[in-house]
Image (cartoon, rainbow, N blue to C red):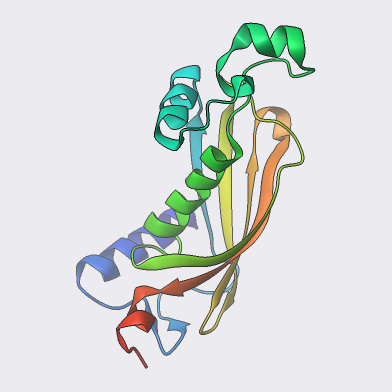
Amino acid sequence: MLLLLKQSFFSRNLNGFPLVTCGRCYSLKVGDVATLRKKITAEDIKKFSELSGDTNPVHLDKKFVESQTTFKDLVVHGAHLNSLVSRVIGTQLPGPGTLVVRQELKFPNPCYAGEEVEVTVRLANLRKIITVDFFCTATEGKIVLEGKGQLMHSQRFKGGH
């Protein structure tokens, strides 16, 4: 189903058809899902730290983590995980032109360097404000991020109907 969704989305997008008109999506429906998998390395964490300016040693200093915390390895920034959610929202579901206007986030478990995460975004409501549910799972199905988002499509900002 995901492959069909991607093909439908990109063929419509490349041909210039709008994804949202009057708060309704043509090629999308409630329950549609998009996923992304990514292994997050210590180098990814370092780059994100440099970009964000968050130099908390729980993300960067393995000796600090081992001696001063109960974590078992370098901890992935929560904002890094959320950026992967944003990637799915902005490139796959609903896709280009979508902006997040509100989010609720929970981080029930830490995500560690070297873990592969799977980000899942599900369309929950397709009205003027698009609602999604999302979660990230890591090793052995451990949930490391869960939340909800409210989205607007850029067509709404240009005086769309």
